Length: 236
Image (cartoon, rainbow, N blue to C red; front, side, top):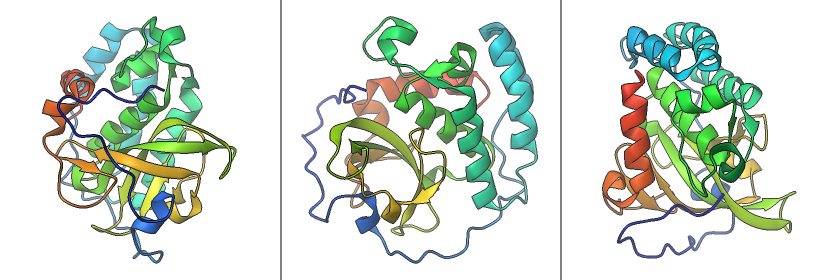
């Protein structure tokens, strides 16, 4: 994965905290809550129609995804995180953008990823982000995090990578959804990851904490594009 291109954004310094996302919050987290039944944010008909236009692979995947989204109301968020993480990790084969799309950097929408059946790290993170939001998880609890990942563990070869972080509470230790590891783990158990910057639909941050560094749709052109595509596919 190549680092995302940022428009007019100062270079991000790594946090002064020790390496790894786990040092950014307390190690003890409160129990995860239930997903609110009234907060589902997706359009079934629009998603179905968009999937049919995308192709047969996307249409088949959406038939499996929609019951998961519909059944999330009242579901424990820990179970929902694991289900969404597993859904995409099992259905999508890791492939770099050059092989999958014929370009150096392409941020795919969820249905593009499902139809292709391939994607790189940001495609997994994006698809999980929009699916969890569709299932009722607030955007404020989710961050796409651009990290430096030590492949094979601390001391391994370092490369650019993206994961999805879920925050039980603001400022707390996040849980990490990743295509490299099937298990959803607290950040303290991912010392191989060093955050550089994070973003969601509402903001952009140096590292994963502190004041917002601006509007992500203005400074991340790929994010602006994928937001529009996902909303056209029935994700809100």
